[in-house]
Image (cartoon, rainbow, N blue to C red):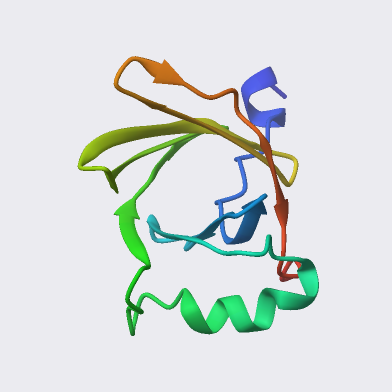
Amino acid sequence: MTRRNRRQRPVRLSGIFSADVQVFRFYPDGTVLDVLARPAPRPENAATIATWLRRELPTPGVHTARYEQHGERVAFTRGHLRDEEIEVRGTWSEGRLALGLAGRGRGLAPPRFARLDAARR
């Protein structure tokens, strides 16, 4: 068996994740929704947050983008922070998500995002 055949395909990014007040919901089709939530959400808030972050029925204040996933790399652009484009880049590996934000020459180190909703099997 070749080395390439032994590698498993990366799992498609899907679920609700947060780091402090930033919350993202990723859909396997490439849609990502995001919102800021105060106070910072906890796993017990996942069901409520899921009602806000629905692509079928957008809620005011929720922003929609398309993400690309290439292997473990994830990237998308958000354009709603003070009318500037914000590049979001990170990794999705072994159930862990780390995303960094960059815009106007500034960058933030990629925080780890905790999954709020239970992993679906």
